[in-house]
Image (cartoon, rainbow, N blue to C red; front, side, top):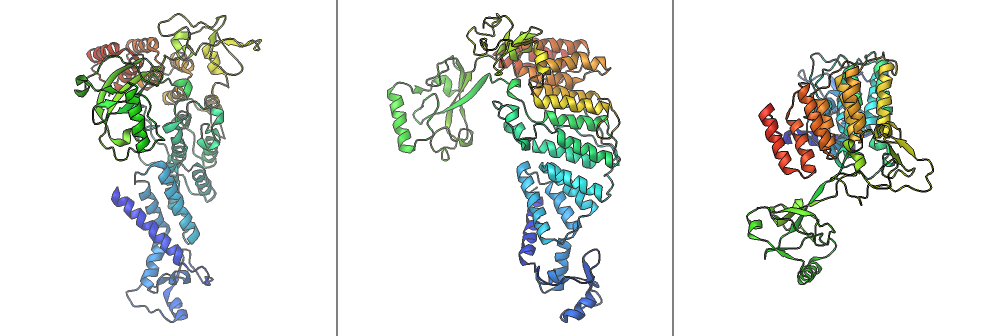
Length: 574
């Protein structure tokens, strides 16, 4: 890929050179043909400086290129450089450079701006398609939709897929639901990919503490308006909507990462740098101190008796018993080990870490409190819940602030909601009914509304029925928004009622979501259901089961689960 990147870099440098040396003040009003060239004989007779031979093409570039280089060959080369064919190949090469999405987005826009400033490259059918493909991969949604509209206005036919191409919806290896690309769907798939590429920041680093309504429109947490534009363009160009395309579109609602309702951080791993004398100071390190002040801080902490010495068991890399954290306010700390890490893994933890390559660290796992009961589907089931108008956590109807008796919950848990005396008539609904509310997730509500519109005919298309992959996309959207009861209802009731049998991906999606909130009861029930219905159990099923048990601290149960599944299904986790 280095060769491809260097070739694209060279092409962009040549474009910059042409732009800087192009004379835009010359008279270009000549008899120009459709490809931007004129006859060399007539041009030579006017200029009086250019001659031709029998082996020379009877073509030459008009006046603006003559300012770049006096040689006719250089001018002809410049013309080829700015031709739609060359730009099309350069754009296609850019899509194969394996660049990160934000970098690729900037690169393709820079090349388009350069070519637009030069103003000598007409947009053709092939060039518009390659620009559509590149902007789709780069996540430039509006530019992609503009190119779709341009292709429609110019009457360019939709790109056909001559042979079926098997692709996955989201690139997730756990998604084993494949489909084929139908006639005329290629460029619309690129438009859908542009939405998912633009949603990459949410998938990578979504702020789970931020409400959906606080997200900017550019984050595309709700892509309905762009999907409607794609549907309209498909209808105007005579491309029918299929269940495969519908599932691709619905998957855009599940490409924005998990929200706070679908996640719980059971533990965090911290690394305490180890000094040369074998001592380390547990707890957070000051990042604002200089080298001298940091040394004084370490000496003061050692005098206070906070510093600890590595034991022989630590030196051998073995785990030790439970210890108490010094200043982080957490007493349940376990599984201390010593490891070797690079400076990049803990850069910024204290002082200047740029010169601390291969610094030894003390690795500690700090356990967090268990998740609030209303996040775990098996803890609430069909019990009525109430919630204040200020959207504070749920509580059971009629409870006095005490959570249900369970070993997983503490009576003083912060998840217990005390009734606000100013809330005279709080709503009382089951968790499933709460998840069906619009306020639960605007994006999830939009996803089901969009799916419903497809089944009734949307934007000029005939009504369609969702297939198993389309329902899997809705299940995934529910699990990513914490609507586990809604996902379980689709899995157990809606799909069988429509004659659609859930596949491994359907169950694995629900299992992965339940594992992130530690619902071990439902995990075991779903695994039993998969076994009874002869649904294939794969490595992602095992991974979800193990993750759920480990999140709840059941290490022995996780080991037994791996062994049992291997004995019965000959399957191991990835």
